[in-house]
Image (tube, rainbow over all chains, first blue to last red):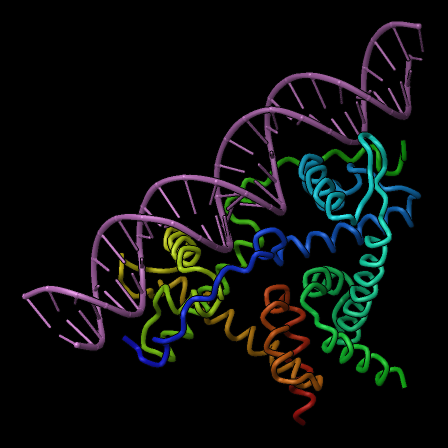
Length: 144
Length: 144
DNA sequence: ATTTAACTGTAGCAATGGCTACAAATTTTT
DNA sequence: AAAAATTTGTAGCCATTGCTACAGTTAAAT
């Protein structure tokens, strides 16, 4: 046995992990952001729009939308457009702002638009407030 | 209907998505990296080490290790330590290097160690070669 | 050598996110 | 108005990653 690790027991289960894993949270963020974008650019958001946007089947979208409705982020009725709840709107705003900052930060590093767009979509979910603040600082310093 | 989107059909299924989604890939990267680290720091890597490291149950680790064995990234036998295949080793090296660069990059932005460590673990998986190169450039320029 | 502790495996459950196939509703065309 | 096309929903499958509970192995202590 390796004594330096021997006494530490495995931690008990986190009851929240099951129902709202990190990955599911990222999905929620991506979806509210996309819904907000579609409403802004096309006046409404449909299941189909999200399916094309995320390149998944409409079935997958439909189920995720259902989950987010039950989590009080989205609102919809059968065969009707998808809208955001107040909570969903708040989240969308936060996510969009963060996404924008990450994107511009990558651009400011000299990365091409396409790559910056791609990478920012993955990176945004893992940028803490502190790191976001550092990126803002960097952008500000650069423009002075 | 909105004509600007009307003609684009939903794409056919990607046969790889099912068996090796993006999320599963990230898991693979995290695991080979952790295995390499444990072997380096403790001489071997056990299921238990990974369970503590990732803060999940040993059952979860056991199953993920099985998957990665079947994907020819890890090697193990029942009740025996876990080692890396050649392929696993290569992947681990790449991942560790990338992780290290992202971490140092965040530090160089003025982010505290703890935050940088945390964020780099999430961000690393989404940093493309081009963005990684930009980070390297940035670090180099700063140290001159 | 036995007992005890620690580690690992297996069975079986749940949530999430993929899919195809088919059914139903809505919208567009004719 | 009827037919056709599009959109959305439902049923039912799979893989991944969580878990608890229990069983089996290995290592440590007595």
